[in-house]
Length: 560
Image 1 (cartoon, rainbow, N blue to C red):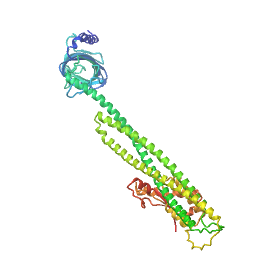
Image 2: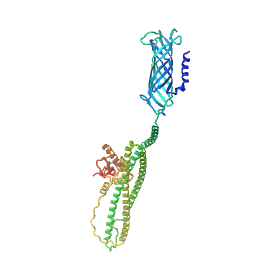
Image 3: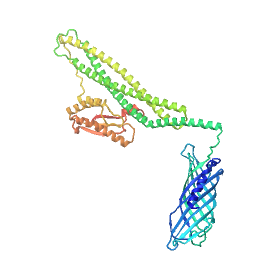
Image 4: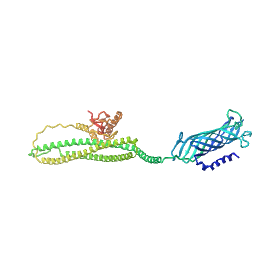
């Protein structure tokens, strides 16, 4: 019977017994490999194929009994000793392939269920048909019955079992023959042998699922359900974690908005203080005027030129106060809009916090507790600062209402005073002793006092001059152009946040920004000196946000 027919017949016979294979676990595989002969001839090995069919019966658990028919060819190129040999045979062996110890098992629904090593040892019977370059033939079994022992047979490698019960083995096997004539050369310390790396694909039959106690099965189902819920919670937490940088950005923007609001409030407080001083000054003038009118004798017959100030001057002052009040009202409206936006963001953060708290009630999220607590602390701090801003805004509204009432009362008193002046103008002028004139302050001194009372404030890390401050700088520019002899030092200041080097640069740039604006309005550069003082000259505490906003300023000082 030919080798090919024999090799085909044996697998067909094994297939007939497939139903019996399911009685216990077994594996049938088809192997293919490349031969590396271990012989007595030095020459070039011609790579030849090796083929086999194996059947492993796992009747002892991880230890199985196997049988494997095979056939192969060996060919060596050597000028003196060329030979070509064809071999076939069958091996019986014991094979150990662990399923737990030394093996890696995966869940049943995974593509790969098991990854395990294996080793096999055994013996067999084989025949060969060899011929040299001259065609001289050595047949070890001319009667097709004889042959020689194959011993030892050994193989080792790794095996992979899929979820479809298919297998793939990667290994190497070794066959040594009980003859030294396969290469047609008698000699050497060892008989001829073949080393064959191979790849095998097969099918695993009769695979038994492990017996599982119903209680364990129930626990496993509960665990799977819990895992699904936990995965859902983890997904939600991942979403929250992904959004956390965005909310941190929002919080940073919120901080910047709050700093701007603090700057607005500081500017408004300065404006209100100036308006209050102006109102007091105007009230004093009106009171003085009323006293002087009350002291005028009733016998006045003629007044050519009133010695009292004109009511139009105070009317102009009132109009300027009204304009300033309108500007402050617009600033307050802007602050209210910013506060509304901040409240909306706080609401979004509260909703996120509620979502995180709901997730914390559903699963163990201790890994995120610290981050969420820090986020909540930041939100609480911002809410406290917002509450302070709201309180300051309410107080500003209250002050604004009081100031409006005072202005209206002053307007009424000025109208009454105007009527009194009109009546006095129709009466004869009394003989009045000249009172000693009070020497009034010159314009430069007044301007210097006005500069001391005004500060230009900046946002954090900003050197931009606000529109409100530009109105004041316009007045400064007009005065300096009219008084070229006056020279001013523009001083820049910062809070204590950041390094001294950075703060000195920012303070200088703030002073330069103010000076550039004055120069753009026509002030000669020779009248201006620019200097940055950094955080060295605070006028308020740097421990509070309001104090830091007050220290972020620029001042104008007349150089003596």
